[in-house]
Image (cartoon, helix red, strand yellow):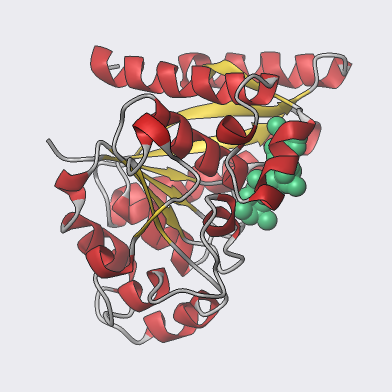
Length: 264
Ligand code: ATP
Ligand code: MG
């Protein structure tokens, strides 16, 4: 069996892509799934959030993209996931070096397909590969979307969230047409959800109207424990497993696994 590869994308900044990537990856690992998290953002937040020091990497996703390292050489086991699930979460880490890749890739052959080609070699090592995309529709994000079978879109239920969505959907269509016939939107995940805000309920209803069952049932509440966890180098689902935020991501992982088993 070959891994299911999902890109977590939204060109809007600060909408919860990295929090979703890190916590979903860890939740999948805790649920028995062998998982690789690819950090495709020069900020390196997903790397740090899994307890891997971005300032001290032997190799990173940057070297992989420009052909100087393989995924097998550059990946590291997340020290944050231990016990029974220990060793089930690997990270292909990133740091600021990756910012240079954008420029270097332009001159390389098959520049949109570099990540896809690299991941092929480890696809049978995992059940899931998640890709944390940067907040842009850049060549890095393009590599993420081209390598993936599907896109998970985290979004806050606020007015401007819907506006930005059409740009992302347009990009996904272009990638589908030009580079990746496999690509589809797996679903939209409502994050930082605040049920007390009226607008939240309105936007949430609009989302369901537009996207139907592409809106995941699981909802991630606004929860300070998820925001605190990265400073301890731990995913929220490890840092405070009983918190409402962690429970949201555990439910999301279960929903995703069930969906794939059901073939829908
Ligand atoms: P960027 O576009 O910069 O990559 P991002 O989309 O990856 O950002 P995150 O870094 O995941 O977004 O989240 C932005 C901020 O919101 C972070 O400080 C994070 O801790 C916080 N955050 C994310 N999800 C939640 C949540 N459910 N509850 C509370 N805080 C959250
Ligand atoms: Mg991020």
